[in-house]
Amino acid sequence: MDEIRIAPDNLHQMVYSLWQQAGSSRSEAKKIADHLVAANLAGHDSHGVGMIPTYMTSRALGNLQQNRELQIVKDAGAVLTVDGQQGFGQVMADQAMELAIGRTRELGLCAIALRNSHHIGRIGHWAEMCARAGFISFHFVNVVGDPLVAPFNGSDRRFGTNPFCAIFPRPGKTPLLLDFATSGIAYGKTRVAWNKGVPVADGNLIDSHGQPTCDPAVMHDTPYGSLLAFGLHKGYALAVMCEILGGALSGGKTTHQDSLQTSPAAIFNCMTSIVLDPAAFDAPEMQQEAQRFIDWAKASPQAGEQPIKVPGEWEEEQRADRQQHGIPIDANSWQQLCQAAREAGMSEEELAGYQP
Image 1 (spheres, one colour):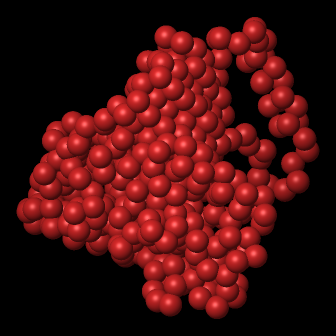
Image 2: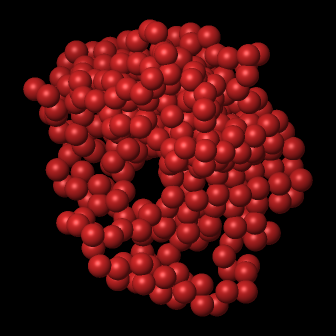
């Protein structure tokens, strides 16, 4: 068995039960399950339930703290600074976005800086929260002290995958969503490829000697190699800005010798987000102009068999397919998830009930 397919509701219940048995409150366990399964449904398995074994390791090491509440450090009206208390990022980022959305309803915009949060997962999830409220948002994220990516013209890992995200809501339609790691591929995608025993595409990895490779093992076995930024110097430059705007501006940490984590399972994020109410602008034709551009772009003759898409459409297609046919999980990742469930205290009888 190389791959299984599991119904989203079944997987959600398994994750929800796992974290309750591991000590999370019902509300915390639900937010974790909501986020991780949603990432799988959106086609981003790198940020889905495959993260759970890493979270369990981080918890055991005392890095990930359960049942924490977001702390407001500074409230300057349209600008907020909050601290995640090393708590679950799926909870801390959710609370941060709720604060930002409420403040944007009141003032028309809000900038919120979240620091000291454990892994906040798929950034597009938080942008989609803003879009459901009718708001535009931008997100700059760093990964504190967990270097995975080499700088342009460098040969070893110096900073994290540092995502950037932006969203534009469209009433009655899928929002335009840009959400990507500034590395050519996310670290989690190397984990998925490694578990499947397949190579990654050219141009994304270098080995410990700084030489190009397609073998994802260089990210998981010593001597370690590095990810590369997308787009040569352009992706690297964006990663630098995410590091500074996400880490330094939030009052959190950037990655340097003094902030290095002792375990790769300790994934801490800082995120600076800007949320805007489009109704506050003088743009009565905004949606029509956006659609005119989309129609214009899609009218280009196709270069091959694949249709022209706009940002966000791929994820929407993945959701439709996976809701109907189930979420695919490779055999290695499934076994790792089951082992994490056992470590959380799940019985073999209950675990068997989730087997597809």
